[in-house]
Structure formats: structure tokens, C-alpha cells
Image (cartoon, rainbow, N blue to C red; front, side):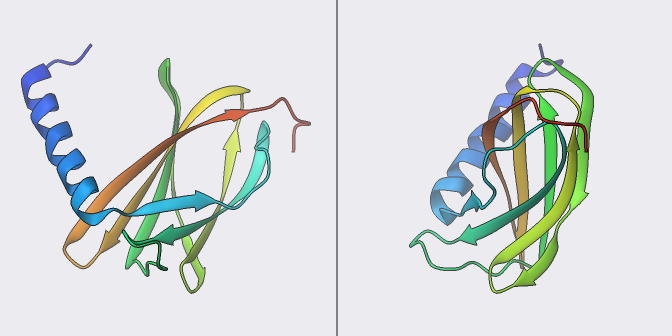
Length: 122
């Protein structure tokens, strides 16, 4: 539950409008994610599916049921429209991955949910 539902709703509406206007997206280039250490690489796209070059990218990971495992990682530009980071996922199950993209004055969070399988601790 949120402390300020009306304001939270307005902010969400603004983000959704911007998401529709900009049409930015990302693709996670990794195979199945597993618990433990994961080297994550994403590719960014604009509204037309063309490569998107960002000025800054960071990744936030979180569990739907708690903020105990929330972490934020700065992503390194690895060439063209690709960015990478190393993230640690201590538990299997659903995780939210939000990629925060900045390009000039535009900033947009792009969220997806991924299911992590049990893996060997790395």
C-alpha cells in the first residue's frame, strides 16, 4: 500500500504517457537467469526498433514481495546500443528488472518481470 495513492497514480500516468511517446524498450541478451552471480547484457531500442544510444543506463532489481533485496547497478556501455553489469540474485522466483534510461533531457524506467531458476551459488 502506498502512502500517497493519488500522487503515485498521477506519476504512473505520466510515466506511461512518456513510455508511449518515446517507445523505448530493451532486450535482455542473457539466457535463463539463475540465482547467484549473473552477467547481464541488454540492448536498447527506440520506438521504431532502431538502436538507441543512451547517455546513462542503470539497472534496478527487486522482489515483488519485499524491498529487502533491492539493488541498483550502473550499467557500462559496451558498444553501439549495448550495456552490461553484473548482478547478484540471492533467491529464485520472480524478480522485477527496471532499466532506467537517460538520453538528453528524457529519462524513462522500463520494467520487466523475469523468473530466476535455482542455480549453483556463484
